[in-house]
Length: 375
Image (tube, rainbow, N blue to C red; front, side, top):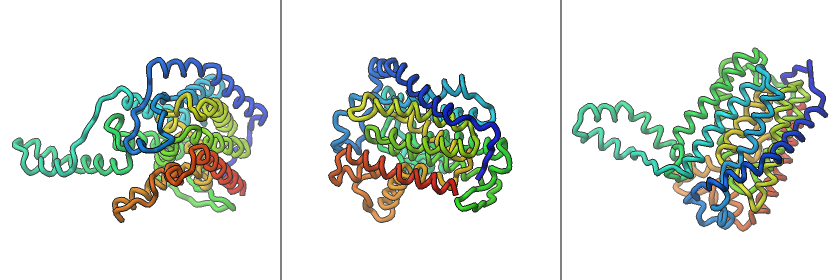
């Protein structure tokens, strides 16, 4: 376990930042709510969710409510907790991921349909296009075209917004920034993977692709889980609260304060997001906060516990992976619908029951993750 106990901030001060963020978010939330409703920032309904009971009536609730958390965290961190060693990169990665999400949200609201050629069409053009240069171009760029088309497998069926392959590339950039910071700037202690019960594994440069994968997967996991009123917000409160404890115990005062500010802002967001939601998080919030959670967990040396600290988020994401694998290998669905919260909803659980049970299950595993991290 990485520990830098010098200069540890007082726990009361850290919790004070959580209260400050909560109050600040409440103060300016009416401005954000007015803005979202004034400009009718409402995302088009996804085709696959049209028959889900809980989604009926939500087309009037605006997206991009996650800005309440992102902006509050960024501003308070800049004025009160701006440290080059420990907060620049986490906040920068959060803002980069949030910007990606914001562009996607806005394109889904105000954009036009974007279509790409199927692989079958590209192979046909390589064979029959009249222009030799174009035939060569399609042949040379075939690997890129295959990446674009196969990435659609893991995306929802929307014709607007940023395409999946574009998201993956930008998320790769965010993960690479994190990996560079961890590997090159924080020191050799971060070249190890610290597992519970004093098991240390030297990863060396292999920590770089691992960090990139974790950041990308976690950001998308939170995005996937953001499908019911209050679901993602409530679980993120548990996860970031655990990070407050672990950051403080390990002596990472700046990161503990960053986590505390995030929790305070999330409490306010969740207050407005509980059914019936005044707004929804949107990609701007889910991608930004998912990336921040991953970066902060890695920065305090808790890769070994991250799966449990973000348990339900990862389970939701894995349910999508399993569903895709079942569809393309077995020719059938494994779940009634993925992600998992919709599976239980189609089995007869109400939205409220699903959310509360997921909150409780997530909390239990987060506590288990903290317990593991302390061993």
